[in-house]
Length: 261
Image (tube, rainbow, N blue to C red):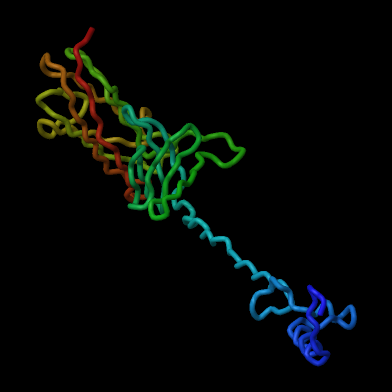
């Protein structure tokens, strides 16, 4: 026997070669056989390494935004505007009645007057919190003269020891044909003349649209030498030419009695 070699019988060598061949993958017999071999990186259940299909992305729907509520049309017609004392006012006509309103007033429990401007008023519909515009004249038309049922002119201040004037009148175009006006005041700080005094602190004037002047003037004079503020309350009973009542609401007036220069 030569050193470095092992001589086996032919039968034993053949069995060893057959065992090795049986433990190995079979060789591909064609190009297609090679493609079907298992990939060493394939996950379980995927013997041929085919990548899984991507999952579809969920569909995201945009949120639905509800349309803002639409208020009903304004139930009022412009009946005039101006100033009472130091406040701008607008007259709102509705079904034969007139309501005088200042900024901040709530009319019929549903509309708040937010602004009174030169050619329009802004009313907010409270249930929907939506502002609405009431123009004082149609588009393209020139603003007409105010047709308020009654006008009141009163100074904001009256100097002590001096006399001032309160003017009340029925303007042309007003629905009112006649009116009885009562003025309530503090008789301890003011003296009133030019009207019928029915009792201290209460003066009455009768007015008619048929009279040439169409207005009355009451003279107010402070009593005492101490500056203060006082309120005037004006109540009106007005009627049209047919005797039908015309609603007139006049806000309270605050007058300052001040020391003169």
